[in-house]
Image 1: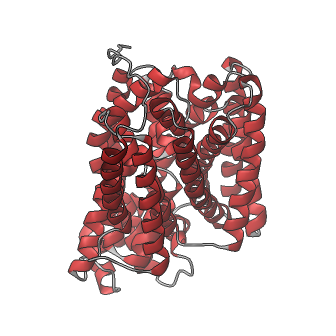
Image 2 (image 1 turned 180 degrees about the vertical axis):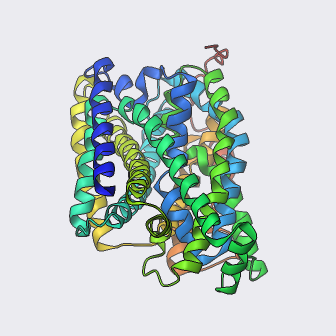
Length: 473
């Protein structure tokens, strides 16, 4: 029964994708990449939430707690809570800049604001490098969801099926299909987490008993040392300030019809934090009832299978799968847009969509190969990607706030920050247990400021246009 329910939901999602194509404008890249900047607050809310609460939430969050303890739970909760108020003020400004420059990708902002082809390439390449592990993250989670249902598919087959579905989502109408499907996905996701969490509390006999049992089984209910605390707090800070630099989040912001629409959507996003106590419950139940999981990423699904009837497991797995598929689809869309608009800018707009879809296929194939050949704990993948995305922050802030920053300064900062972040990551070095991305970002800001001061009279910026007045729905 679980397989039947799971399959029917995926088929229904494909139906919604096809239906969304009725309002799609063929060969119009603005419609394809950013929905014609026409999404209302309702659609924007679900699309944005879909990018925040993805397969990493339902699979990676419990897996991280199961494998690493409470520290991985704290930063996951903390950075999202801090990102919301930052986004309330920053996201409308990003939308304003996107509208002003007719930007459809994040590198478009840098190209138009600074008038620099080299900087456009630096930003585009930086994004593309770190979008690979993000795609791998989604495939890894989808593989977990499919095999938890008893399909027992080889990893290559599982990721191939997922890649085909993600491609269908965006090939028919671009960002509009994921936007519509995100409503179905969020209902299933929230319901799945709620049901599994309640079942975990009920089975053990309440909150107190669950945490007591988890502690007796060796669960870490507190930080082991100050180094772990430092890492968690600095990770919260870094990922919160870097969140609106993520290329797919920038694209979601661009889909809004106005600045006020973004603010309205942001006000209600913290309500989704209500799901996390139930995710923690499923994590600790797995520690108590399923202590020998071979793969920590199976913690949530394994809990669902052990506590719920088969048909409910189908709903849970479908919610998890749709979470990964939607983020994978949006990420693929962004990759295609960056390639056709920023790496190959001479492609006529009426051909950009078809070329973009070819790039999407290549990106999905690369992510599939990496997922099958180099599986990894998903929270590690998130950290690696964030290190790169976060180095774009000084440039974003320069576009919306600081007219004195130069293309050479921003470009030098991005390169410096990226090199430092990757060096620290791959050598295993640590500076006072501070998040490597934050360390790199500090150097990034310093280099951006210094080089901008040294080159301010040598670079000709575009003449700033008057700020757009906030628009109303």
